[in-house]
Length: 375
Image (cartoon, rainbow, N blue to C red; front, side, top):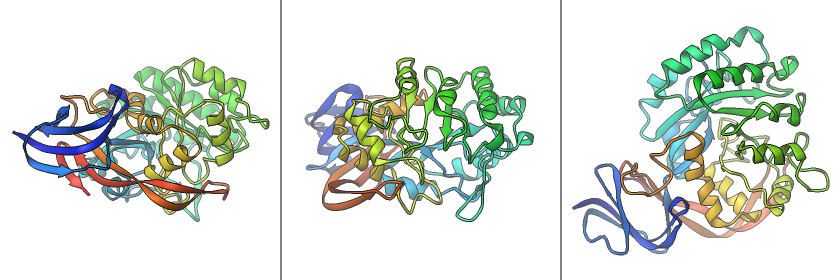
């Protein structure tokens, strides 16, 4: 007998090209089957009228709660946002990832996987009242130490993270990213690059990203926006996609603009991954959580199936994980039950521009490790 069946929901699993009313069964912590009538189980949940999707994966979060100033509680956030896997985007560096592992990751119920920040202290001074870019001080950048720790923590670390821009690397410009590039190559890991206001410029930064690397904050407003003033796509951005760079939303408190998003979607340049960049100063708005970010992309014209794809299998692929992101039998028993709640919802970008949507994603349940976890 199965442990759990989600009965009668609209199953949307882009990785398997499934969009149909079906049951989803779980046993032994894994997905057991997806089918028309899976019989009986120890626990049966009626999810008719709702969507059942693979467990949502938020590729850009900051959940080193208590160990960094910007961290939020992972389990609390996961329940609120419908996520089963949270990817921490470089909150911890070589000097403090051990504490992140022991005090947060190993104690969390949801799944947490980190990018390792190339800066020794990680993102150590990110707050409403104190803001110091961790890539501004050359004394904190030691590629040998970063590589050593990345290899020691290879069972946990999914990539290398670096932040560059006027607010994060300052006078060092691209140097921290060049160092991170070397670390990522030596470790055999993807590089996630953050770019804020220039300098450096977007073209200079993008040339350091290769196939399988991730540009986060990909729909940021001007300056360093991927869209030209006339709305067309910048040439270096199109070239980066052509060579296999992954484009991730990473909404956050300063990195998503409706004007940019509308132009990019209009020109059929959809993000590969949708993520929230949730942290201390964005969880109260304008990012809020992954579901709100997904809602924004839906209402700028991204098709529903592509929104789900960008929040499940594409996010899993970006961190090179083949055990999640789809409801394929034998994989991790993670699923999210969603509903498009109807009403009038004001959605705001980082520039203060507001659009009013007639629906928004709402979490109605989470299955984690084959068991009903929340809902």
